Structures are given as C-alpha cells and as structure tokens.
Image (cartoon, one colour):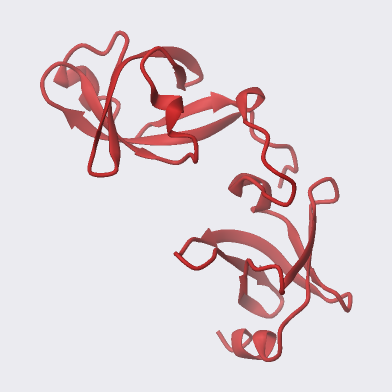
Length: 173
C-alpha cells in the first residue's frame, strides 16, 4: 500500500440530478461547506469546474456546475466524486487529522504489540471508532484521548493505551 497522500481529496459525492436544468444533489464529505459556495472551483475527474449556484436542502447541497445544463448531463454524473487538489486542504489544529490520513496507519499498543492497520473509520455522535485489522482479527478502537496516545503521520503509526478489557472484548470477533 502506498503511504503517499492522495493527489485529490473527495469533498462531496454526487447523488442525483435535481430538476431539469442540470443541478445536482451532493452529499458533503468535508467540514468546510463553503467549498460549495457559488464561484468556488471543484474538480470532477481531476478537471476544474466552477460552481454557478448552490442551495441547501435537508442537509445536502444542490449545486449547478458550469457546463452541466440538462437533467441528462447531470444524470451522467451520478455517483461521481467532487474533489479538490491536496494543495487546497485547510490546515487543521494540532491533534486533528483528515480521515484519509488515519486510514492505513499501523496500530501499536504502548507495550509494543502490533495490532494491525486502520482499515475503516466509523463515525458516531460520541466519537469516531477505528476498525483495525491484524493478527487478532478485527479490533474496534475508540478515537478518544484516553486510548489513542499518539499519531505519527510521517512514520504512519498510531500508538494506543488499551483500556481494561478492550483487546479481550474485541479479539473474539
């Protein structure tokens, strides 16, 4: 697996056409919804495209992309990702990470045991949970400060302090 960060980062997923004039409904995959403001540029198939208009509807954004002028043209975009170049990522506060940076990290206990690799992140209201696959099978690691003691992106490594019963509870999955 490559340890290089992706060149383009997905910020939204096109769900479906909206109306007959080429608008599309998009599910957000960013903490920065202003990326979908009119006049902003997003990338579709690694090609820049301007957002002509945007409106919000039930937690999704309805946008009109330049050059997409019919329901048929919008339909062809269903399921595609809207992206930005990695160079446009906003800096996060220390101790915060983008999801793509966490996926693929090797996970070690503070005692030096290799648990495996983060393969998925499950989000919930309370906290995220990292799904780690390794020799013990699948282990769910809560993304909380009491458990995750360090993340080193350069070394692609996460160290955890397992709370009592965490590894026993998960090792029978």
